[in-house]
Image (tube, rainbow, N blue to C red; front, side, top):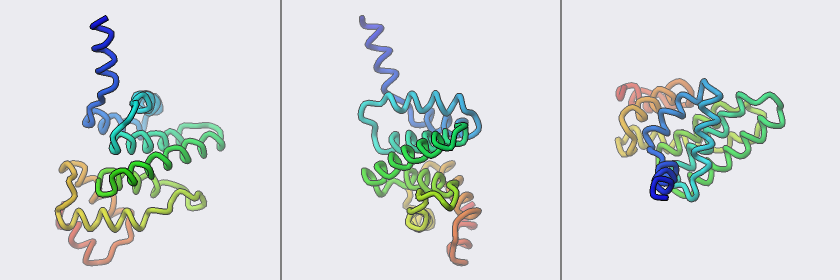
Length: 164
């Protein structure tokens, strides 16, 4: 009985660093995406950052789906969870970064790109000010992603480039 309880506790307390690593792997591996989503979905009341990774992982799963209806359903669900995570913790820049990367990868014709400007501005300002709360490797990823994908003012671009 005690061993069973121990296993349940381990399953429901995901390590955020492991989630981050598995998410990176899920971007190019469908089995990892499915496994990660299953583990994240098992969280009974996830914290906002875990909810954001759940949403981002679900949206990523769309790239592996065969039917257009399944692809759209994955994106719809994932986007909803990402939006919920931002509502729960609007100042968490990692959540904003996840939502920005997911929305940025969406085709223009889908209605799931509504926060690009808002997230880009908040994330850029936080990174430039140094008040972002991100782990250094995630801050570096975010800066590089923004430099490649965001519509930045020349002064913002210069400041972000100086942070690399």
